[in-house]
Image (cartoon, rainbow, N blue to C red):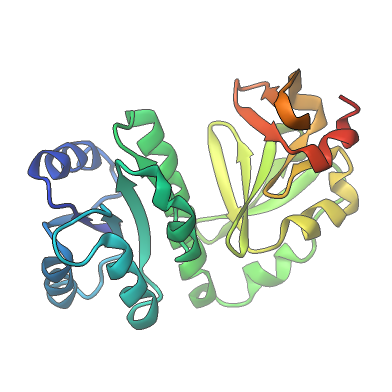
Length: 245
């Protein structure tokens, strides 16, 4: 991956740079202190894969820059890294890979990078020809799901998938510690005969019922699930009846 960090605070850039340089698949890492410097860097390095963007910067914000790039360079992935949580919805409207809230842990950064890798793999998929795409339509119905990784298909046991989340036009298949990205809707996934053990508990995610370890009631008719890995997921009021809780 070729990544560009865009942040007006030098310590924040230094922290991210230090963590990212330990990633084996980061082959180039650049820095910019504002939107104008970022555009110059993109001209100098036109094959940059993704930007890690702060939001509040002098001049144009990271959201402004992402909006411009969405029009001019839609193939670029943007991962926001900011101290302000109120911009999250707008960021995802701009097809953000993730929204990393400062201060973050190395583990949270690792999750964001996994999502970024998945997005970049999907972006590269059309160049691999139609074989992978065609085979993905032939999902097995005997306890497995076909997932794509580095241009090859592998069989993933459905029992290993704890939950499935929507991500723009994709779904994320979470089989801790791995996450796989697939271009299909959550409704399509749940409609397949092989996924009968999954229950939709929110507009944005479904869970493998066999991995539910605890259900806790919350105010306003909602609930919270704890899964085998310790992951906690919200159950919205409109889907709570499906869990009979």
